Image 1 (cartoon, rainbow, N blue to C red):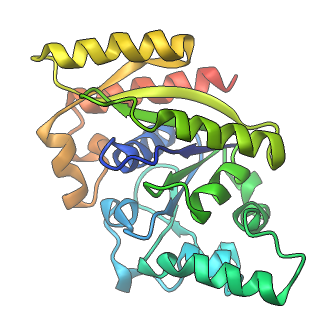
Image 2: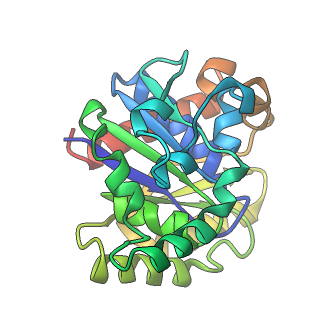
Length: 261
């Protein structure tokens, strides 16, 4: 059965998009047919896989408003077992579009549109990874309603747990009202600089807070990992021997194990 996983944290700069791209690519290399949905109007997951606005005809915004079928927005990338639904700045207008729809259609469910739109292609994949925007707005709520579980990236820096309570409250609200089966797949420690004591302190703090929910894999802070998106490649293709490549391969194996595959 397909697993839909959102990468979510309303804080920016914690490694959501980096994780979305590289986990999706690593799952593909593990033999899992994977669809990456870019649900951020900045479109960084899209450009991070080498696609720009002129390279595709449809995006996730058009899918969510019902302008085009989801099948027409899917791009089969050059990376093993990896497909993409791209995003553009158009997605920034989804709130206005959905409010308009709610006024015109009393039964319109603004937080269930993504789940409804992707239903027809779900069974074509083993995993669907959703890269969420750094906020708890309508797109992120759609992602949580559409997902089986979430991965929460937490950077190994000061104030790492700032805002986590708000995020957890949002997840609890979605569980109670819209998606009772939503689970936390795991908490991922990112951007570890092993030369500092701060990072080690954060690891201890996060593991104390989340206990067994924390993945064993920790993503290091590496220049090559930062460089990879500018070349339109996941780290596994940009630098196959990088420590980050090994880290995301290990993360993919942990995710597969936690999902019982």
